[in-house]
Length: 73
Image 1: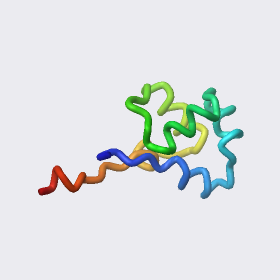
Image 2: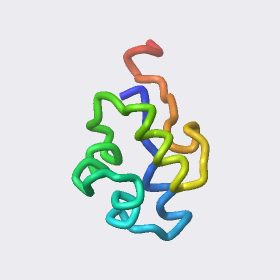
Image 3: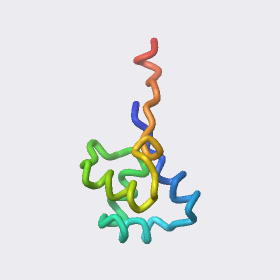
């Protein structure tokens, strides 16, 4: 996967639980898990905005582009 989701890093920095984060953002804990585990196929800008607002961060703090081995070959 070329996009890595770093929600867990930001949650750890703030000592915030997934449940608390999910409630503040307006997602279910199951949907937060889908995002954290990189299984999401898309994220709405409104959801990304809510996550950034709750975590007081920038989108780049939550998402990182990483080259796939196949792409770099």
